[in-house]
Length: 410
Image (tube, rainbow, N blue to C red; front, side, top):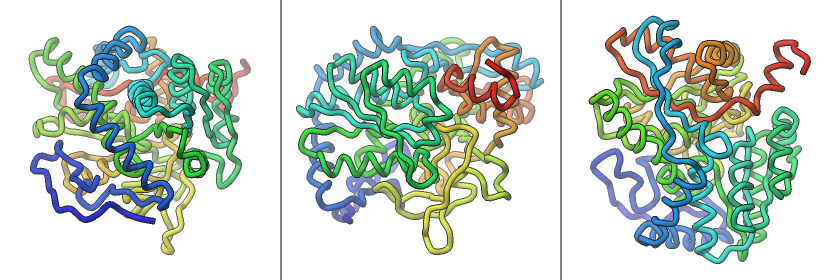
């Protein structure tokens, strides 16, 4: 395994990271098999070239507008604001994107990049299935064969999204190793990529993996924060007091946070999955319950034992059920620029139902975690406060699972 060559290039502003090595302070980098290194270097060069290409940017903007449905609106959650009795709560409604989540922002960018590089096959990993659906959707649009690796456990609890992927023409490969969840799916996707580097593009769904993926996914997802920043300034004439998002690997949160990083008066708050409770050990809160290590090609906070072996994560939400976090989040955590808290399965299930009943918006179980801490934050900030929360996914995919947990027959 190799990391990038040592180059001491340290950006000044927090938003300017990573450095030339793909590092966010002590985190990030690229620790991959030697057989993958040429492909990673090729990808980095292609992405840097695409960023400077006006035609690539124009095509991306057109598809975001006409196909994805950007910009997604912001929405004042009036009844939840009244229920929580504090700050005004605004949703950035990226669940209204085509395919039902923020994931397509990134998938569109990466598949356009794959086409640019002449790759003829797309692979991806998925947890809740939203990234898999988004990847399969864009691959279908451009006529590219697509294989999605998904943990066997997640295949069972996210059956609607599995069927959607198959309808879109994707091959869904259940992964039964480990706990059959997101970590295991990513392991299998990396194995496939190593074997098929000549024609295959790996669309990673979160701000993790070897450089340039964490920065590239962040850049594609930053449309969330750029839109929201302009929208709330237009509506309120001010920035929010806090920007809040759920955290698995962390792409929706980084997409929201990044355009606000240098606005020091805006608190950035990520909500990890506490599962059955941090104290039980059955959770997916890498920052609260983990320590630095290396997984999937980058250094970051991971759930691991004293011998450095990865500990299985747990969350009611398949999209947050990952034993690590993106390296830029680890960096912002240590720099104390962002705050990271957590919410349990029980709290997420409560917020899933409450948001549905009060706002007529069925949230995915992932952003339902963020809502649990928005409730506390609203009271802390008081009536003059403003909270911007990323409603990053809709909950259609979770209805069968929630119904079963509530003892309701469909």
